Image (cartoon, rainbow, N blue to C red):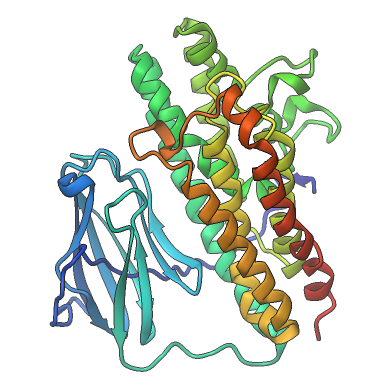
Length: 401
């Protein structure tokens, strides 16, 4: 869909998140309450291949503040709180040595999972005691509406994280650090890939909707295969060409990095506060999987870096999150289809694990021509098996009563 920058709508911001537990830890006490919120400290280290350690594994229902410090974990850069597959909140770009960051969320009693990609033990349990969060009421449409609000918070978090990651990429390029820029290029890409179906239609004021000159998606994410000669090449993939294809950082690269920073910052400003309809989430999830089929499995998206599997995983995560926020409503509408979609997501994620490499930029192996020749058909079949049931959801949620 096409969005103009003057048509954005405000969205209330209310994120939910939770805490951490180190592998093998067994902590009995609830987190202490200070300033009205339970306090949980999370420490990331490079010990044992990467560890997440928290000082308390439970808290009472209500506000919880998590303070995250990455001491030495070069392979760990993010923390997520999961509940029934939904990412209720997360912190990204957690490089070693950076100051402690914190976030506060309000949690109802129940079981949560803390996910730390790349850690020796990636997913650990966190318990919240007390009254559970109230269930959505008012029928299926109300349940779906609550899900769209939660998904809006997820999108807000992604655009914030993307700006931070692109800031870091630009700093590398300005410093002329080619190796670091290559690493941080991989780190910046997934944020856009997770939400591109939600933010790809913005046209800057003063530009015709048919012109790529004012199209933020074109300026941020256009590939060489679809260039508009009248507008030229901008954004991530033009930078990718310089870093990986030419193997150099020029003044033009620096100019493009500055332009990318400006455009993603602009995108973050206008994308925040978007309102979504349930069918937007369903259609967006389907579009992200189409992106996997058309641009990632083919190796077209990252033609110079071959980080296609990083983008692949980003598209899948974005699609899963869109579905997860629809799930409570979908369980009322069609529980059998809900289970079928979840089963297919699980199979795709298990398959992706075969390509994980915590030491590789972005966390996945390079998608070489040899790997593409041997595995593309397998990857395509897995995505197709997920696409088929997922593609039937939009109509169901749009017509729900």
